[in-house]
Image 1: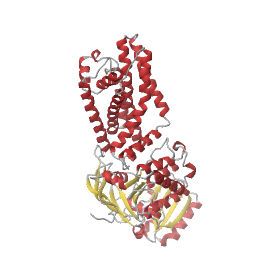
Image 2 (image 1 turned 135 degrees about the horizontal axis):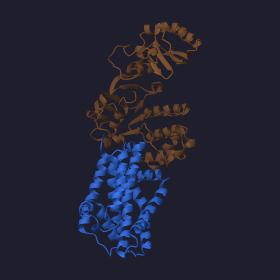
Image 3 (image 1 turned 90 degrees about the vertical axis):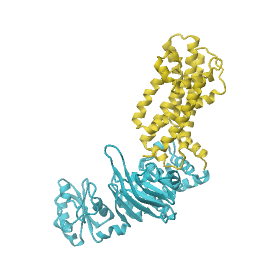
Length: 244
Length: 334
């Protein structure tokens, strides 16, 4: 039995366990993605083409981060509460396989919302986007990083604390991060903090992937995001290996 | 390193840090041989689950060693997990799956190929009479069926060591017998079975060895026959109260230095010597006639009596104390 086969079997297990909720989760994802575009549009009134472009290309990042940072920890916290988390860890499966299986399920889940969010933005603001093929890889990196941070958080913290923290994070991501608007609107100190957080680089990467003619990715963003990606995956695996 | 035992635990200690600082396991040593069923008995909080979690590396011991076959489970938990299959005390939620699918998937995750997983699953589901529920969505099956499914998930590709934590909870009496047969079959096929339970009465029939845990320590170990030997010939009187307060036990119970008077709701038990049987029956019948007792029964002393004598009625007992030291006058505990 290879680790890959085990990962796919675990993913099948997790996927089927969510099967009942799956349609609802996808609908919620889609609504959130569309609502982000339209809701922000309402907030800012009649947006200029530049603002509209930011909104439409920021929404998919918000969706990906929400799934990774909010829904993944919620599902892990739930499995800890209901007792399946510890039992799964008694199985003869390499720890990274748990992470991979969950990331696979949640990335698939985030996909429809992301695509529809982009479409909704393009329609609502009458934009014509010409996404680069590598946007798929970019989305994956963003998804993996966000989900790993969420996973480590939920594994290490008590379920109730993890749930609360995710609620806070969603606010921080949606309102106080330069995802749907440029960083220069933030107060200086917050912009400085964001230089070291993965959120802005995530937004920059996805934005440049969706509208390569208007945006490009600063080298610094790639480095920061790369470091976060590696650190969060290692952190999540370490958290899974942790013994009581 | 050669070993006859599949599971070998030596000097195992684990203390949980924090405000309460519970000593969950305190210098525990015992073995489980292949082909045998060893019962691990103890109250809630006696340290059973902590012990199990250390065998698969979810919890790291402070001191001591655990070997599964020749694998050091403390330093190489990932190798130990390949040799161990565990049924957890809490039911593993399998909503979204059916019992058959859940058992098959676990079998394949544990390394069976697809046809073999399907074959083993079919065998187990038939043996446990789960056929009618096999393809029912898990959210529609009862607790007992879920429990049996969890057992099948553990037994589908059994490890060298199989740990079963309260496998019979919620299971109906008919399927319970089927379950005991399957547990015995696991051992007969060569696995070492560690049966964690506080259902002493049922365990008595299936276990080869017993380890009694109290307050994190092993307070007794041996075969059921060896453990009951000191009480051989003793009788257990069990009474069902109809109204409080409970009547005083007759003198013969005290004279027999009865240990292990036991309280459970309206049920009281105590052990007596056979010479006192006639007296205690007369006493009990009088109270039945007077309406103070619903019923009574007199049976040979069982493992449960031994267990209660060892761990006391309502908390940890000193194992070194002489018999009788843990005796509680049932009338006084009402």
